[in-house]
Image (cartoon, rainbow, N blue to C red; front, side, top):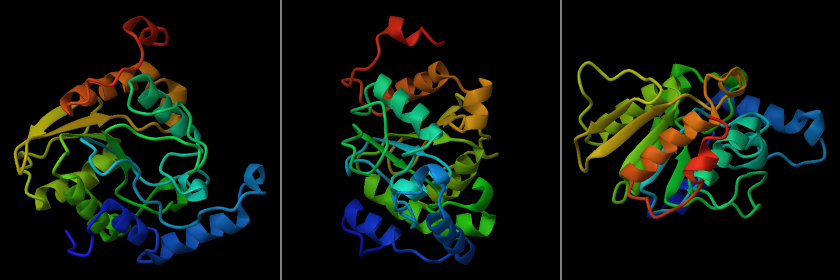
Length: 249
């Protein structure tokens, strides 16, 4: 971890000023200038989007990258797009978010014991960062996890890209990655030995492609989050009752 980061707030401020990847800088700023018609009256964030959540989070959620008209517009991970609508509803349902919607940075939403981040902090064209961009951005994720490490107990990874990006970071941070490397899959759960035992869980990404087709349902997402909540020691937080949770299974 860089010695200059004494807090996540310092790290987040530094992340938001990064200009290391020319293609991503050009794209995020182009989107912020041209905008989507529905948001023409809004000022886009147009910068790297830092992680979101408390310093003492025991659960981390790792996605892919900000959406061009979601996080790149609002300045907060998964905020202002349909993927975020699904994710924050599920987080609220299991007791990990204070409200079920996320519309902008100052909407009052708080996360409980949970931090959301990504291996790439800028919105990429076609939602596809290059391997080089992923690797260039890796040190931010490594520093973030190092700051979270005293309390961190579990990580939920949304999608194969995040899984593949996270494993090398965890290895460099001292966790032992099994050989052969564990493959991503929905509902995969492995426990890594290292500085502290760390539970790693896989979940299909909350992309529209997955949620619209039913590959990932709200019930499936809640089940992974509920399991992660227990592994992270956040069981005192309450959300849906079992009966309510079965309504859209």
